[in-house]
Image (cartoon, rainbow, N blue to C red; front, side, top):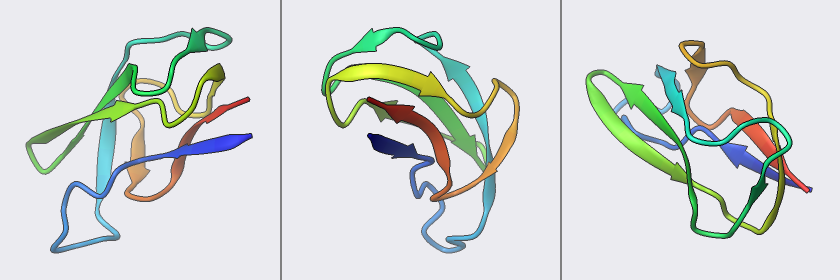
Length: 77
């Protein structure tokens, strides 16, 4: 199992919270390494999240939820 982490978008404040803006995949979907799976926002900065491995995704965070940078947002098995 591989955890997908909220990326470090705000390097000046590594503990800053952001919002999971959009999921491009659903819980239980198969994903491929490098596939765009989500978009996150921190302080008006958008960042894309891609799958680090092939597998089946388990979403841990809902859209519009606040998440601290570096925290898990999904798992891929």
